[in-house]
Length: 204
Image (cartoon, rainbow, N blue to C red; front, side, top):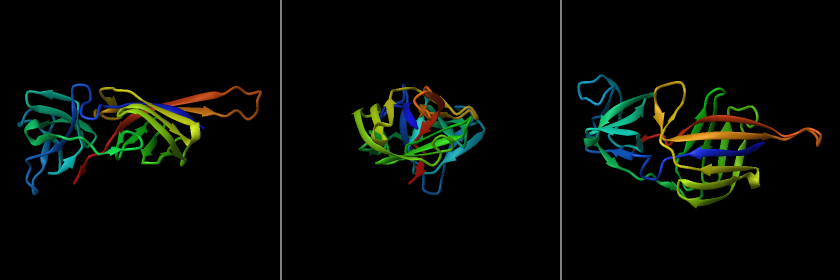
């Protein structure tokens, strides 16, 4: 049974010193290149389409923005970015398309307006938990799940590593499972898995 999970996200327009952006001033038949270093002469390690959003920026350096693309962390010119406020899930006070995942073991969680779909962890694999209620200001509040069997508490943070690449993400999550004892003589046991969250950018 899911007990609660603690998510540490960005602010609606900033993640520490950074924020969400969209690609701007790029022609429809062109791409915004992601460079290995904050330099136009650096190797290309990825790209964004001309209408991609939202893009999480974790750091800036003399007109360059540090971003994640293709499982790596790189840099794009801020001349081709514009501030972007993602559309919010009104029930959760989280951005639409919000997803979490972790490794060791591999698991994932996808949030919608009314439920959370969990997979990959034996205890809850394939479970869908209804969202019972949500409270607090955007990006910093609590979410009750499945009539009180779970709770998500939101806090601000800067970035997260998935442990398998050098990519960075704007949210952290700690997921705690409460295992119901088979009888009253057995004490409750708990299991914790951790991971990252993001809103995947779309080119639209």
